[in-house]
Image 1 (tube, one colour):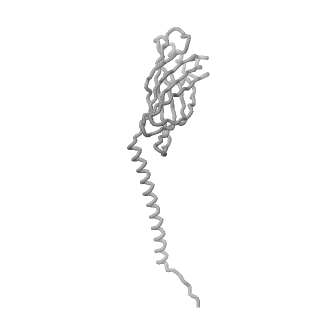
Image 2 (cartoon, helix red, strand yellow):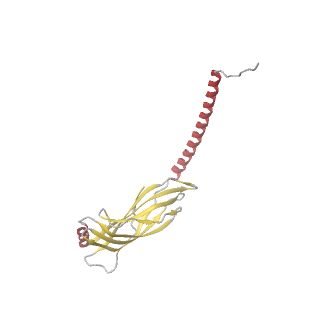
Image 3 (cartoon, helix red, strand yellow):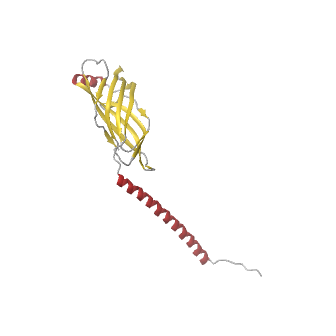
Length: 210
């Protein structure tokens, strides 16, 4: 006579409870390990505390800035910036850099892409860009504002760079952070038309928002 072996409902309940406990132990072990890694990375971040990159204006030259129509602007500006990483233990990857010029809140060149690059500890790099605009729409007051500045003997431009950066600590690389650079360039702009470009040679420190 054959015997049929069966487990009681109570026995099955105990087995199910044991499996649930095993999963919970694995989950808690993984969570603890992940939390420890995050805490370690955050601790390193607090100790190193990376400083914002520094930018300064080295040179800006206006080769063209005139209206081709009532409200259409042609512009050509050459820009040179000095970028510096002030950190002793943190490198910086610069991604998706875009430069442009603005005058009294109006963008007067199209966005110009700069090549991405890596900046080592306490390293400096020169960045150059040719900023241009052809037939850009501007406010009706643009010609009046330029004429008034010419009478005053100077013109003020904002030279801007927007982009994203990543911090590098050892082999660890952070996510991307948006940053914005604003450089103010003041150029002599007299009543007579100059034979060469309007130039600004200065070591003005630019503001950097991160």
